[in-house]
Length: 119
Image (cartoon, rainbow, N blue to C red; front, side):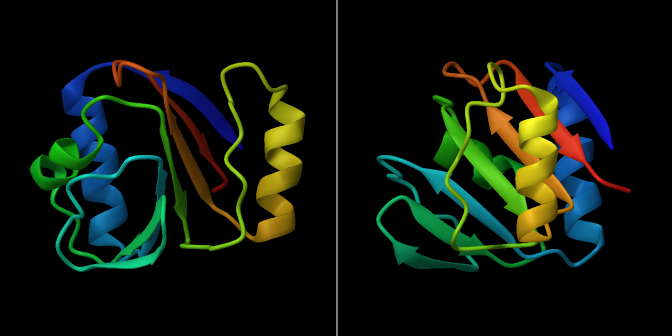
């Protein structure tokens, strides 16, 4: 498993493009989601499933203020963790239990993303 924090917009864009190029369907967990991205389905308040292709600019408009989590594949029973304070082992166990390959967790101001990837 790879764990990293990314801050550069180019790195964020590349990560989203990689998920999109794989045809991934992702789940976006976010309170107060004002701008629901296209190709998405509102599952319940605070959760949308988004189909590829993923548009980084459009997603940025939805999550620009941060404090959101994204999972791949899209699952609807994930309870977002604050990965910035959780031990990596706790996050890894949660990922394995739900069959997740990626979790992206955005800090409150959306500058830092903590990314967990199981290859």
